[in-house]
Length: 292
Image (cartoon, rainbow, N blue to C red):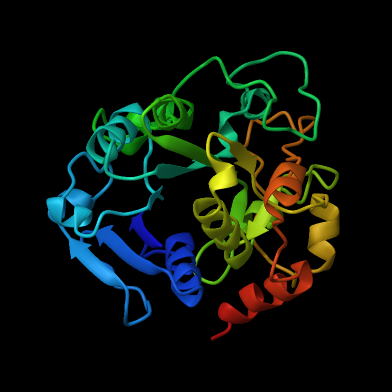
């Protein structure tokens, strides 16, 4: 199978590309060329200045050969997701969108964007979504900042709403691993809220889920939560981490009574997903990477 990955050179994307190549699939990566990850020699690179976020234009070279599946790692909102759907419609069987758990109403309850009663957890793929769009717009430094157009809810609608091309959505947790969130700031800064839970995922495990859903046609038309099978509390996570002098975040005006816990059983039962890297090993690899 030939797979096109839009934005496959950084963090999660690089693991996705390596995983696809290791399974014997041919892979093309579309990016600006500013960052060249350590990818297998057989991976084809298509460089273009327009491949930066938001990706609104696509090279015709991406259709030679035509991809069986397109994995869009970097679609942030309605405009760039629509541009991708329009370009690849009729050119590929299916598009997989990498989305986020911030689409859920529970995230709005946590941050105060949508005050109200707590949302029940764990959150399934059918849990209620936010009604207030553009969750980071108020923090944008300018009208041209990414936060102004960021809205995964609208990106999901574009990819899943096209009747002429199959669509799949994966809602990711907080991802950690060598290179990103390796200091576990998302745990240490919330140490004063020991019972709070937020689903995380080790980068290689998350990338495995993305590759699996991209290659399995049973994923067509489906949304999947990705992350740990069991979500520990902050207190439990801290027991397995080295100490840190990182200050706690006393400025976060969050409602920590609202957990952000995903039910990840759907991708496990439907597609047979299992984490290749156990929790403790992923933690060790991440910690060791900060010492090198």
